[in-house]
Image 1 (cartoon, rainbow, N blue to C red):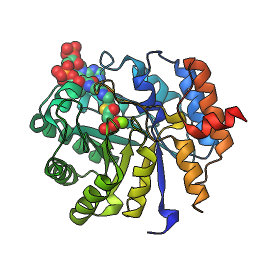
Image 2: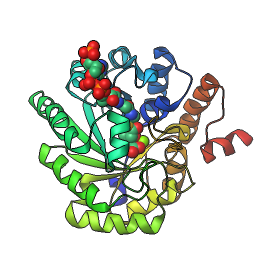
Image 3: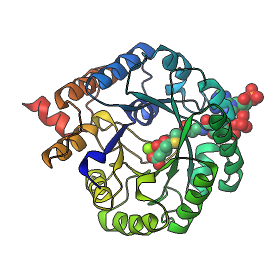
Image 4: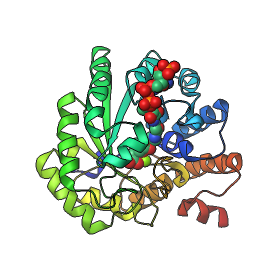
Length: 298
Ligand code: HMG
Ligand code: MG
């Protein structure tokens, strides 16, 4: 793959804010989205239309979505658990949706209150309705590299789920290291197998940085031809239903690494750090991105 094919999916406003104790106002989220766009990010997962009791941090999903400015070349995305979620999201500026489930039974149940098998028809309702409205749907598979409840997760689980999701018509699947346990050799081996079964350009990497391996795992993705990477500004992130999960690969750190390798990301690092600094102030705590912290120290 040529390096220009790399796509960054900024998930900080969703994956990041869903995991913070402090609930930010809709206007702060909107401002952050606008600043992320100004910094050059084009794919923004801005919220999720899950049950407001399960994730109160994002209970303003519709209000936020409706307040977003229409911007050329920018795609707003949202996480959708079921038909009710999609109905709430339709007719807002959100253009693209993402369904999600886990490769391990226990995490799936804790996260969305269903067995894996029971989840498929729920997701199919979403993909069918989205297709009838001409909308693209992405899929996420969580706990691909390990489950906080079950430990190791067989790759066959992930492969079988990917097959079902592609059959439903999702255009891309993001492989989640939900609790940040993956290491490079395992990522390489699993991606080698998965890209043998599915086209690499329909897969994405979603690495949490709990143990400091997110960036190197993202790099391994590129080596394996998986050129869509999820990331979160400031290194925000986590899953409220995966104990011990912490931030995603930080967008700043990924951009720094890629630009240093000669890959044009279109992202202005200083403008990006400004967003993270604004949210640091709002959350009243430092965010983990290394590049962000090194900039502050200067
Ligand atoms: P449930 O309680 O089983 O839902 O929750 P239900 O279908 O039985 O319905 C119960 C009530 O909830 C009904 O209301 C529904 O209408 C309502 P009632 O009739 O009792 O008045 N309801 C809803 N309301 C608003 N929006 C909705 C919705 N759905 C039902 N969408 C459910 C099932 C999936 C909704 C719940 O478990 C849930 O919201 N879970 C979300 C958990 C979550 O957001 N986790 C974090 C995101 S996943 C993640 O972070 C991983 C990822 O980053 C990748 C990685 O890192 O691995 C993507
Ligand atoms: Mg995540």
